Every structure is written in structure tokens, then in C-alpha cells.
Length: 56
Image (cartoon, rainbow, N blue to C red; front, side, top):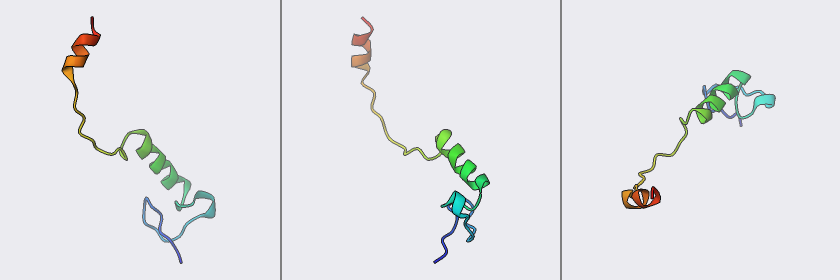
């Protein structure tokens, strides 16, 4: 079973860079992790009352 590269979807993978097909795709994925592209969106609730108490 040939798996596709998770970045460019090419079917040929290089064993050295699995699950990617090349160093280029591996670097693209690393960049996406570094800049927050893979971040899971959350809805944070900020409690301003605690922030005001901490300032004193």
C-alpha cells in the first residue's frame, strides 16, 4: 500500500523523510507547526476581576 505525502499528496514517499516525500515537504510541515497553523482554536474566557486583583 502506497501512502501519500501529507503535505503535497504525492504518492511516492522517500523512506528518509517519511511520512513526507521530500525534505521540502518536511520543512513546510515544520514551518506550519512553528507559525501556529496547526493550532487548535479555543474560546478562552478571561476573568478580568482576577487580573485587577493581581495588579495590587
